[in-house]
Amino acid sequence: MPASRPRGRESKVAMQARAREILKRLKKRYPDAHCELDHRNAFELLCATILSAQCTDARVNLVAPALFRRYPDVEALSAARPEEVEEIIRSTGFFRNKTKSLIGMANAVVDRHGGDIPASMEQLKVLPGVGRKTANVILGNAFGINEGVTVDTHVGRLSRLLRLSRNTDPERIERDLMALFPQRDWALLSHLLIFHGRRTCIARRPRCGECVLVDLCPSAQL
Image 1: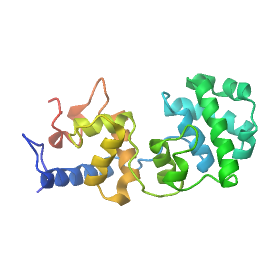
Image 2 (image 1 turned 45 degrees about the vertical axis):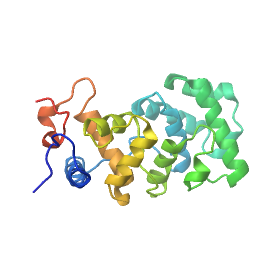
Image 3 (image 1 turned 60 degrees about the horizontal axis):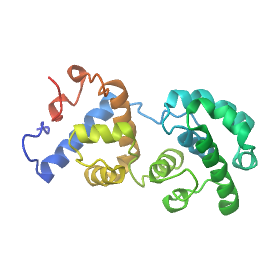
Image 4 (image 1 turned 90 degrees about the vertical axis):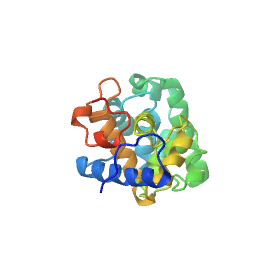
C-alpha cells in the first residue's frame, strides 16, 4: 500500500515510506530528468554553474557558448582579461563577481590541480566561486559521484512543501534528504525535484490538479 499524505506528526518510518513513493512517482513522471545546463565536460559545467547564480539555466545556455569559444579550457580562462569576460557574461547578472570567480577558479585549478577539474568535494568546494552546492552539481553530473544532494531554490522549496524537511538552510535540507533517499539517487533526486518545480509545482501557480504527488503532499491546494 503506497504512502499517503501525512496527517499530524509523521513518524520516521512513515516519512521514509512516503519519500520512497515520491521518488518512484517522480522517476516515472520525468524519466528524462537531467541537468539542464548545457555542457560537454567538467570545465564547462563548472563555469555554467557559476554563471547560473541568480540567473536562469536558459540564459546561461545562451551566454556560455560564446564564453567557451573564447576560452575553451581552464588554461585559456586563467589568462583571460576580466573586462573581456565581463562583456561576454554581462546578461547573466552580477557579472563582475562572476568574472572574478571564473578567473579565480581557473587559476586555482591550474595552480593546484594541473589544469584538471578535481573530482572530490574537499578540493572543489574551496575553489573561488564554488561551494558545496556547486561541488555537488559537478560531482553528480560530470563525474557520476553521489556525494550529496544539490539544494537549489526549487529543491529547497519542494522539500518544505512536501514536508521532507522543515529547515531553510540548504545544508540542513541536504542532510534531511540524504537521510531519506538512497545514495545512488542523490544526484537524480535534485533533477527530479527541479523538473517538478519548473513544470508542475510552480511557485506562484502550482498545478496541484495535475500533480502526481498530490495525495502525498501536505501542502496540496485542492
